[in-house]
Image (cartoon, rainbow over all chains, first blue to last red; front, side, top):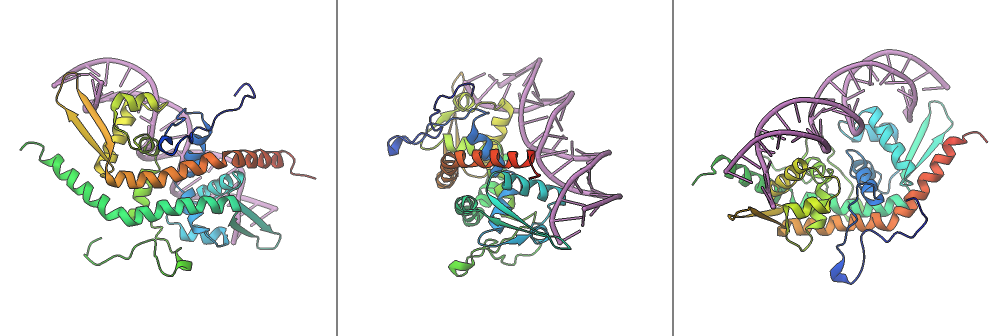
Length: 141
Length: 141
DNA sequence: CAGTATCCTCCGAGATACTG
DNA sequence: CAGTATCTCGGAGGATACTG
C-alpha cells in the first residue's frame, strides 16, 4: 500500500492443483470488489441488463422491492466500477439508458452461471433445509 | 406457496437467445439463496474449503476479520443448506472438521469463477474508479 | 422521468463473557 | 477447542418529499 512494490495476485495460479491460496485480508481489493458485486441489488441489475438497454423506471419495475434510492446508488456504483454505461438524453422528460460495458458483460457471464446454479439446485437446498430442521426438532434418539 | 402447483423455473431456459427472463420477486427462492451465498463470509468459506478439510480455528485464522460468532453462524447456514458437512469428533479438547459436500463442491466451482474474474479484472475496475472520480471533480469543461 | 435530499429504522455483525 | 449467550451499534437500506 505505502510503496509501489508489485503485489502478487491474491488468487495464486500455480500448478492446476494448487489454485487455492487466498488473500483473505479485509482490505484486499478482491474482498472489496466481491463485497460490491455480491450486494443486495447489483447481481439483479447486471442480470437484467444482459444484452439489453434499459431505462431507470424499467429496472425499477422489474426488480421487486428496490427503492428509488437504492437503485440509484447501485447504478452509480456499477457505473463507477466501469461495469455499466449510463447515457443521458437531453430531452424533456429526461431519458437515461443503462447498458453493460464490455467489462460488465464479461462479469455477467460469470454471475449468470451462479444464478443458473441456484436455479438448478434450489430443490436440493430446500430438501437439505427441511432435513436439517427436522434433525433439530428431534436431537435425541 | 399455498397450493401444490408446479412453479416454472425463475430463470427460464427457452431458446438459447432467450435465457433472460427473471423471477425477481423478493420472496422467490432464487433471491433468497443468492442472498445467502452472497453474504459477507459464505463465499470465503466455500473457497477455502476447496478440496480441503478444515477445522474451526483454521478457518478463523485464514479469514481476516471474521468474528467467532459470524463464522459459527455462517457455517451453520451452509450446513443447513447442505453445502458443507460438519463432523464432530467426541474427543477432548473437541475437534470439528468442515468440508464441502458434493453440492457445495459444485457451487464452489461457480464461485471460484467469480473470484478469478475479480482477480483478473481488479486493475480495470480500479482504473475505471479513478477515471470516474476525476470526472466528478471536474464536471465543467 | 429520473433522479436528489433528508430522515429514520432495523438488524447484520462485532465485542465480550461464559462453557462442555 | 469450539463453540453459546447477551449486549450493543453503525450503517445499509427504506420512506417520503422535493426538483430539473
